[in-house]
Image (cartoon, rainbow, N blue to C red):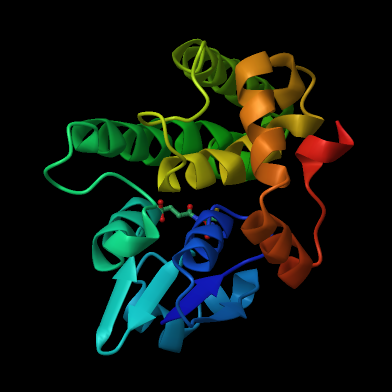
Amino acid sequence: MKLYSAIGTCATAIHIALEWTGEPYEVEQLDFKAMKSPEYLKINPSGVVPTLTDGDMALPEGAAILLYLVDKFPAANIGPAPQDANRADLHRWLVYLSGTLHPYFWPHFMPMRFTTDANGHQAVQEASHILVDKSLTLIDQHLDGKEWMVGNEKSVADAFLYAMASWAYGFEKPTSAYPNIHRLMQRLANDPAVQKVHEAQGTASKALAA
Ligand SMILES: N[C@@H](CCC(=O)N[C@@H](CS)C(=O)NCC(=O)O)C(=O)O
């Protein structure tokens, strides 16, 4: 398996999940230019990371890749199996993180894509922060009295949240202001697989610095 990733992005979640499987894999870190190259667009027409290749298969979309890994490596126990009562909840949270929380960050990182007003970037970023707060508040409430996003066990949904919630540590209302999320982030930051991924990326956990 090969993961096409970029440092500090949502693809970090796939890197963590691969590490949890214990299976062999390689990672190529792309920069923005490489993501738009004709060769890469053949395997990911959106020109974004992540993409996972496995033999002849090239799979884009983080949520789809995470489900693929859950099902391909059941012994790794990184998410409920298809017949498990918690499986629907895994789908729910992967879809929510991919389809709601993640896009709420886009105007923060890429304000120029969300307004044609060159002077309007700050307002667009402020709107992003309001939406991120709404989403992190919802997730924090969900985590009240719970250790993990889905059921009572660590799963790929936690890795997905870890990658995204890391981005808000520098916000005016930082991730540490959401106590249940922050606790989960700190728990994961101490996970050996997560530490290995940080080491490979040359990054440090924002959760431990907060
Ligand atoms: N729907 C895609 C979105 C992936 C995505 O937006 N990735 C970001 C990094 S977190 C990216 O590669 N951005 C580059 C760009 O938007 O040009 C998924 O969930 O995999």
